Image 1 (cartoon, rainbow, N blue to C red):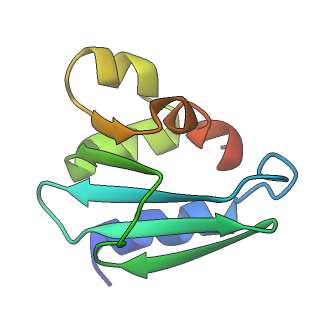
Image 2: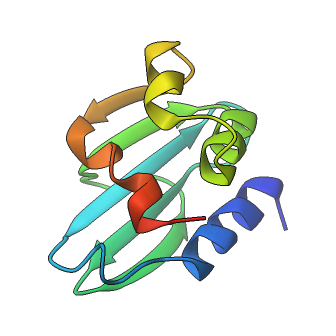
Image 3: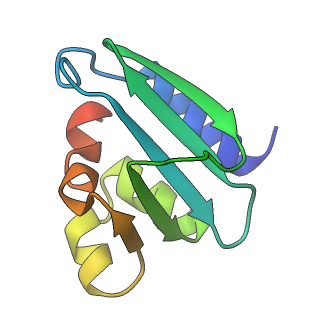
Length: 104
């Protein structure tokens, strides 16, 4: 299993359906140094798939280390964005909810 896939598997394991209650969204992750993945949230469920989604709600571009640091809580997502470590396209406000939907 790729390192990126392992990160997304761990995110799925801690998905908080209550936080994502009325959410219908697709988070596209474009990783500079690994495969691209997307997480689809709909009706309180989350599904992961490899590759590009046709119509993501928000696209987040970063390297794998940045993703790991943000999802482990070592790096604040907003700080990473401000430092240029994360590039976002689409519904950027949705991206700020990522750590609430996938809490530590």
